[in-house]
Structures are given as structure tokens and as C-alpha cells.
Length: 432
Image 1 (cartoon, rainbow, N blue to C red):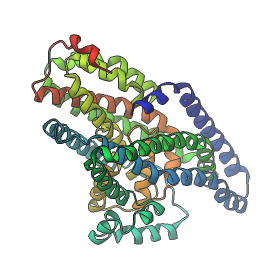
Image 2 (image 1 turned 180 degrees about the vertical axis):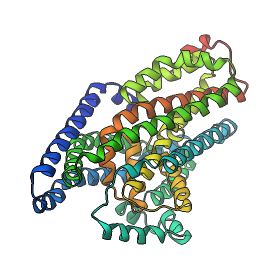
Image 3 (image 1 turned 90 degrees about the vertical axis):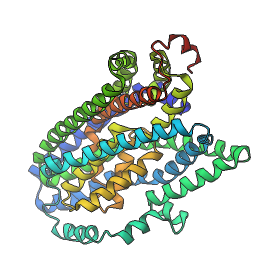
Image 4 (image 1 turned 30 degrees about the vertical axis):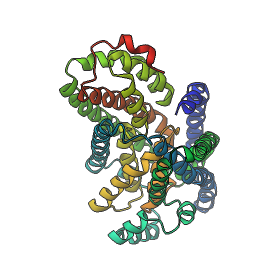
């Protein structure tokens, strides 16, 4: 976690440059696509669109390539490092109760918003692809309990990695992590090695994200060449509904926080104001991890509780990201007219609940999970490239929400433990 934090905090400029390139690629893709849409013949457009779309497919495939090693290495290391979970079982239990409840509320909120406002229907992706829709419908409706079990329990971990069956990988990784943790010192070299692997894969994520502008250009150029600029009202509508969701999520979190912490909630916000702003502008909650630890101890949380709950929260309690994952996955499904009944949506919700646990500290982590989930539910993964141009702005709000959620979780569990002092100033020197 701390290595990820250091790598993140040193590179806000590079990340901002990437965002600039993505935005430039978006405008270039739209401009060239629109030129072709208005000037070229129908036969040229039909030949051109699939070829330029290959750029988007290359980016998507590069991301998919990383998913399996990333989930395996980060989850195993995360679980193995919590090897002393029994010793702090009570605190861990209270923290997990908060995390799971907050995650479910966030996921459900995203699901409800998409179903009520239907943002995906503002982008008509499949006007000319009736056969594709029929094929997708056939695949989607046959999702059953038997299929779900087959999706969950791996027959072979190698097959799960090869086919990017993320949930199967999560099951294997959890068992592997628990087994590793139970072996104590004997397994330490393996944990160290996997920790290195996870950081190597994170480095690869950085490299792959550099290809994002090319992918965005290809995806948008293709879709605008075929459909014209009418699809872009979708971005405004999508972002507006996403912000509404974030506002509702903050309202829920702050109400619950106030009920438990009372007026201390205001003090908490004064303390975490600076980390919150850094997280919002750099879109990296990891960059503020050390500072957040320090401020929570200053607020009055016991340092041992902070150093236990905060890393746990960074893996298990990403409220903003959770809300966004159901929101984005279902919006893409709507855009491609993939019918998802309530049972399938709730299944997707549980899948997201589990798959999102393995990717703390990954830039654009939500997109990686959305991509994996789309593949699993037969939603065209290329849809992710279409929401990528606006993702940076969504990411700012997601990240800030994640930081607020984790600060609240730490303060609330400290309060439940009777370990919340009024002035933690004396304890600051303990914080890392």
C-alpha cells in the first residue's frame, strides 16, 4: 500500500497529462469521425468504422490481459497480511460490518439510479445491429443458478485466468490467501514475492493506461463515423445523474456519521479537509493515505485502530467506486440494449461486491472491474472505452467519496470501541 502511495503521490503531473491526452483524443476522434460521417459514402463508413474501432479493442484487450494477475496478487497479499485477524477479530468484525453495509448501500444506490433515470438509453449503440442484440439477449436470459455456480467455483485456476473469470479467481485467491496466512512465518517469502508481483502489475497498469488515448480515439471515431454527434448528449446526462448519485451517497454517509459521532463530525471534516482536496484533484486516494492516517490520529482515533482499519478500508470500503461500478456497468448494458432482469442485476451487484475487493490502489480501478463484469454478463466491453473520456471527472468525485467513507469508518469503529479521545494530538507521533 505504502509503495503504491509513494508512486502515486509523485506522479500527479503525468496523470494530469494523460487526462489531457485522453480529452484531446476524444475531440480528435469526434472531429474526424464527424467529418467522415458527413462527407464519406455509406460504403466507406461501413468499411472504416470497424477498422478504426480496432484501436479501442487493442486498449480493452491490454486491460483484460492485466486483470487476472492483478486480482490474484493483490488479494492474496491483502489477506495474508491480515494474518493476525483473530487477535483483532472484534475490531475487524465491526469494521467489516460497516464496510459491507456501506458497500451494499452504494451498489444499490447506483443500481436504483440507473433503473430510474436510464442514462444508457440516451446513447443508441445498436441501431443497425439487430442480429447482435438478438444474440446478446439469448446469452443474457439464460443466466441461471447453475451458471452462477459455474461462474463462482473454478474447475481450474489456469482456465479461470485464461478466460478472465474474475469471480473464480477471487474464490481461489481467498482460499490461497487464507492458507498462506495460516502458515505463518513459513509463507513469508511467498507473500513478499507476491507483493513484488502486485507492484510490477501495477506498473504495467500505468503503461497500459498510456495507450488509453489511442483506445478512446478509435472507439469514438468509429461510433461518431457511424452515428454522428447525436450520441454526445449522453455524456452530459450520464455525468449529471452520476453527480446526483454521489450527492445522495454523501447525504447517507454524513447522516449515519452524524447519528454516531454527533458534532464531532464537523471536527472530523476540518481534519480531513486537506487530504480530501488532494485526493479530489489527483484522483488518487493512495496519495493521501499517510496524511489521512496522521489526521485521524489527531482527531482522536487510537493509532492502532487507525493502522488496522484504514488499510482494510482501502481494500474493502470504496463507497464512491462501488456506486460508480453498478452505475457504469448498467448504463453500458442499457446503451447496448442488453436486457438485465432484477435477478441478474442483483447477481451483478454481488459479483461487483466481491470482485472489487482485489484492486485497491489501482489507477482507474473501477473501470477494470466494470470491464471484467461486462465481459461476465455478455455486455460489450468496448462500451468502457466510450465512458473513458468522462471517467477522469467521475474519478475525482469517486476518490473523494472513498476518502470520506474510510475516514468515517475509522472514526465510527473507534467510537464503538470506546477508543475515541477528544484530542488525539498527543498520539500524533505514533502515526506513520
